[in-house]
Image: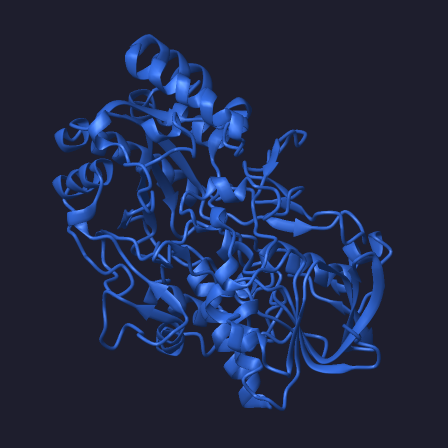
Length: 570
């Protein structure tokens, strides 16, 4: 491609959950030229790699071709009065056309109305529930529900598996939820009380419907005013005084500038703030420390990092409760419930019975009960180590640093102990145990063909020899307290949570929208970066606070809504 002297109307940096809808909608106007940049590889929708169609997320997330392989994060709470010796673990974000929508678990879950009430209260005017609902409807083609809350014509197809088709572990967990007092709500994206429901999935006829598959169709790609450049890393945004005029990029070993009337950063909650900082937009003291010329002193860039902190419990399943071979998904239903803590929104907690712990044969014998805080209050940050665009940002989630998160997880562990004591649950489970992060077990989550045979052999032994199963659990998965010990001793439980808490690939909120007088706001409610011209951010980073839901569908909604805002201005 020859870009010499060409000035695009829009350059979008990042072809992820929000970037793909932005590119589609902005290029609908044939008079506007759009260039979409992506650091990873491209594929045509019909040629999507088969491994990405798997709902079992690990097999694609751990395939280094599709993720930022050197990206790591500190999950645990920051030690207050001691040296920071926290381990930094790999944090999987998609580096591929479609971004993380190409490697996630395909859970197509909306935020709840109270999320967007709180966004508006935080200064994101025009992002209330009635403002965002039309865009949730616009993006979806829901095959199961219709009416005023659901869309039928959007590019992202949604399907669910209802209770008649649930495998044994899902069915047993939901019977235990009902026995514990919760009801079957049916529609997670339209009924917002407490209860359990089938998870809406963006997968149809065996194919993952990522934002790339849904929005970058052959018709869109053939538009003469649309171009896409992959395997392209953006070093920094180029400014003339306070106006963004282009991007300095590295592509195929060449370094050159691409120009546009408007730059839209859509690189995700970890890479978007890093790009802004490398470009001179961020906290002045930090920029000076790295020798970066200050374009705009915005202290909020990289701050306010949020996730869904959680802990996991393993369930060794009886044969009849295990997921059948080639079953289309492993996350089928979930429970949203309220902790009823003071000044905390309803639906602030979440449990997901996952029917498989890993891609291999041993993983198929184990179910996972994921427990997480659906609305967290702990705040982390993203910083940069320098100006090298190939050096990953420094990510510190600082999970459970806010007591409200820790106390709700402790209460959730007690609740989990009661759920696993229900006869409906015990009917399908041989053993139930807390899961601790293990570097040894992590090696077995990486997809390798030789592991398939090794784990198949081990799975036969563990079904035949109970002591082999016990050894595996005690040495590879759960090397700490029992579920009973956690439920009966809050200090033991807190210490365990502090050492095992993890995230769910839902990083967000690092370039938050807010009012002009909010010193920590990075953008206004239309994504325009404060203090400069010609620059927007549109992705999960502009969320003021994390929604009570997986973040992918809301990120797509943000791309749709910001695109309409841009069109209205032009």
